[in-house]
Amino acid sequence: MTADEIRQVVLDILADIVPDEDVSNLKDDVPFREQLELDSMDFLDIVMELRKRYRIQIPEKDYPALASMRSTVEYLEPLMRDINNRK
Image (cartoon, rainbow, N blue to C red; front, side):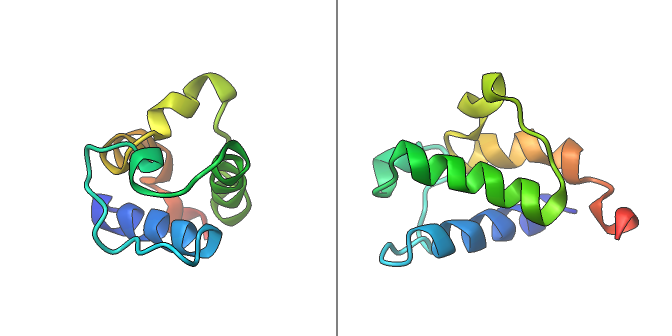
């Protein structure tokens, strides 16, 4: 998957988790929690949805890498690079 495709996946997941929030104008370098009403359970839902949809294991120690859109895409890019080949 490309960085743009990963970004769209993250936006889709966020839209499902916080449906009352506008995720279309998220800033890449600002933490999600500063832009959206996300609590710790919502954050875990993001991780679990990535796991369910793409079979990606994200260790708890890596959760800080998922703080903003840019850091999330950078973290997921190597994990999801070959995702289309696995389907």
